Length: 360
Image 1 (cartoon, rainbow, N blue to C red):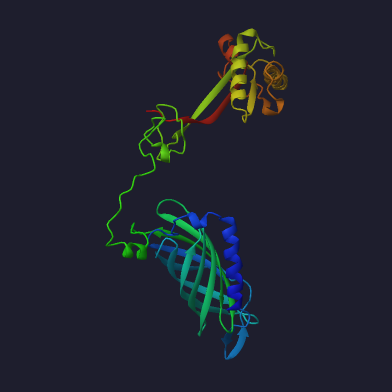
Image 2 (cartoon, rainbow, N blue to C red):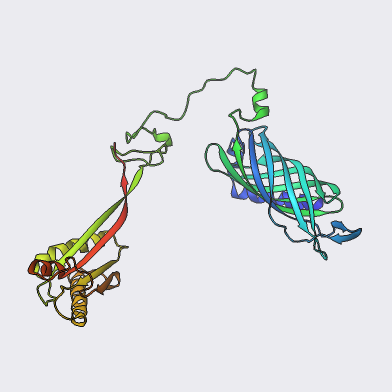
């Protein structure tokens, strides 16, 4: 019991330091009745015994494998709630290849310092194998909302009795049921007529006209016509945009003519706009000549386009890859003047995904 008090009092002082506005907040940690599932790992006192074939063995004193559990909590006032739980436990045994099974069943009274931090005191019955002990328990925890109904908790608990001291780490996910609020607060005020007070919050002004009032608009000044979510923030969709390049060449030439400078400039502009892109330039030849000669010619054609991107448009060379395919990938698989002109080329295609705001 001394250890429980020794941990709970410093924990309370520390949490009050990190939450200086706790006394000013009117907040219950659960608002409503909640049910949850939990996973916990427990470190049993090494003095606990497991009997195997009539011989006693000590339990492993390290934290055991995480095991499941359930919990049920009810808010009592703006600050206090009561939480019952049951945890299944397994523990290894020193000196023998065996496992000790059991469960923890108990109740805590939780004090909510603010929206996140809480302390708890409680009592439980801890059963390991066929040994049962009443344990007194202190808890330090942190809770956070996922949405209006769901929230999670993480906590550390120390439980003690005259014989044993155990430690436990717990994580849980809880779901709020109904909207009744704190039980005792509602019971005390059930016969009291409600007092109608002026609402200090302006619930009507919508400065950016997006349909979400300013008091709960997390994205002020949303552009007119944008579709917004319940927080007042623009809703985006993902679209793909592409930029293609085709540069043609004269027979047995790797010189880029002025006819294609504008196409190369548009590719460079696209790469500057999307600075995380890289491009591969594919050089090709017609079907006239040897494979060895055409391989080198296709590589020169790809490098010629790369040099313009680097030297004239400032694109970093590390973002450009050149590949020569020689005569292996013709557009038209024949030798003729029209086919030859189409096959002598350097090509590239860049595709990126962009976020586009939805509009009304």
